[in-house]
Image 1 (cartoon, rainbow, N blue to C red):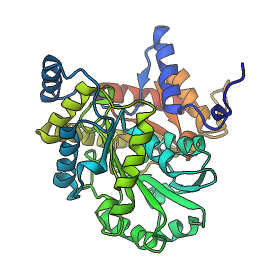
Image 2: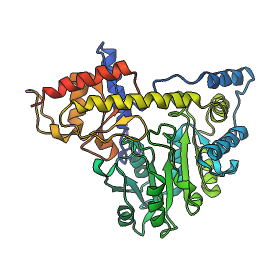
Image 3: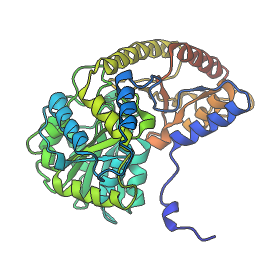
Length: 396
């Protein structure tokens, strides 16, 4: 069977692949501890679930506008003003079936064949693959743990070429946990001001999971708002991964383009989810704050556990819920039957030997790192890292 050449341009997400492998081993009766998926291990807050139940009872069960219900887009505008001091109108807002679809809409609306898209490493696995799907070229800016996994203004300017169409990044970052301060963003803005034709895609899905202070959006700068596509959603901050709702705030022309694209692919997201999202965005944020407080405790616990393991070079994450250590110390080491050549080998070794799932760094643009989530309960986290420590001790 002759399939589309599109399939050869991009890879399956390693995050989903590792989760699938973990499920297969679990189905065989093996006790796998999952540190691979980026999913809060909390239940959706009660007031949000009650709003969904009411929406069902009130028969909100029909097609909705592609961009989302008017009250939801108003709620998103209120949220952006309340949390970020950003002024948007409903015409700037498009809701989608998850932030991943919002990202896809934006890439399809902006990037043409041969356009260059600058992405600092490490980045979420889907960024580069979406660019490849539309025929764009990924231009990576490599970062290091010593630099806090953040780029400088000079590094940004050096990556820009006449073909640069878009710059995309996340803060807080998946997988590194890096968070850009207002001052650091301002340094980047100084460069962008020289190149007004470049658009910025700012993924802020981990906004509420921040360990160092208030969230700062690049859209807050006067010269940036009309060229920034802000991506957010409810999965991480409200424990609503399965509800599938993301959104973008963008200049009207881009928002309309994304609405046109989405109208031919999925139309609108679930009507019940949209009504629940209004309750989430306008209601009490105490549940979100409690989740972040718990993630803060787990972060400290994981950092303490890693200190006892030789060879792992680890940056203390400032946000999100991942640890992303450099594991190159173990290259060339063996347990007598297996040799670790790279981070992918180590990730598979830990899955098969320690029965702990993780994600190799190649997928994130950092081949010497492995991503471990701490979106799991403390008992499983401690158990998982005890297994990891024991498995790594066997590599000589």
